[in-house]
Image 1 (cartoon, rainbow, N blue to C red):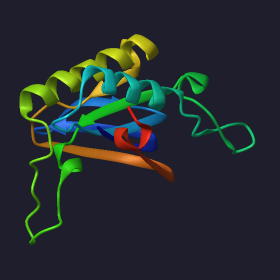
Image 2: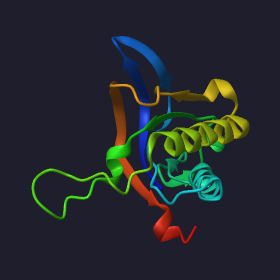
Image 3: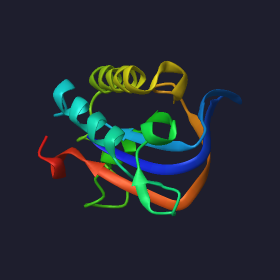
Length: 152
């Protein structure tokens, strides 16, 4: 599983010109699910992300978590995080999870984050739709969290 975590002042996602999810100060998280991911891995990835102290404190040091600043999340599924570009010029996505597993784990991540932060603090995209994502990066500050590196 891969999370691309971007610290944002605000972000929103729309489908067919209608905003379906947004967040204020916090994280925009692009979520890639592989064909070997599990609920256990999703839980560990969520716990790590939610505990990350990458928001600035009163001295401008990256020392605070989402909960510390009453921050919010925008969670967007993105299978292209598992693009394999080793051969040729057209990426392969064979390592990305199929739609059934990917959507199930995406929904699990949403539920876990809402349980932790509150439902009003977690916006989402719409799984499988063509989405437009807009954001105001803060920093910019972007972290890539990969379950393979966390030994999940």
